Image (cartoon, rainbow, N blue to C red):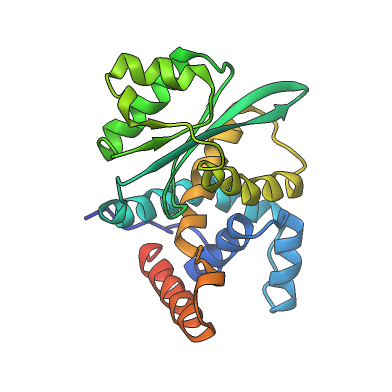
Amino acid sequence: MTNKISYKYFKTSPEIIQLAVMYYVRYPLSYRQVEDILSERGIDICHESIRFWVTRFGASFAKKIRNQRAAYHSNWRWHLDEVFVKINGEKFLLWRAVDHEGEVLEAFVSKRRCKRTALKFIKKLMKKYCNPHEIVTDKLASYGAALNTLGAKQLQNTTQYHNNRCENSHLPFRRRERAMQKFRSAATLQRFATVHGSIYNHFNHERHLETRQVYKQKRAAALTEWRKICAA
């Protein structure tokens, strides 16, 4: 059982802190936009306070969500892909892994697109989630070389269009990147990608596959679970 998150010495109630962090990470909003939304609800909070809360509590919330959902991840199929992110005019790579349901498993920032980086990324995944039955990638040679080193080349699937699941998982991140007006450093990108992936997993439901009633039930359950996870 993970330790509870401490809100000691914070004058603002934990419920407001949780709400502000959830709004900022879950939706493509800026700190000032979250401040305005809370202000409309009678909560007078400075945007700098929201920035501090996201930095202070975001990683803790995300870690508790990952621990809570660890037993529910499926190793049937992984989808791996990488996307370029420009930071101060310099290109970095954000490697992402999702399962067959679109759950973000891992986000990893690197400068290079080589075998060594792909090997480090896949090793990190296997250490955390064990080996999958299938790994879907694009035709980047680094994936094949890394899997060959691990003796898992037979798991790779590079069939065209089969990796659309991971390609589509980049879209919420790209919307968030535009709202944040890009990132300032690789460390900021790594920290936010990890937090965003976990919290997005928690609230993400495949709305197009569910009836309105089922969607409302799942949405209410996710909010209830969020309050329990972030409880003081």
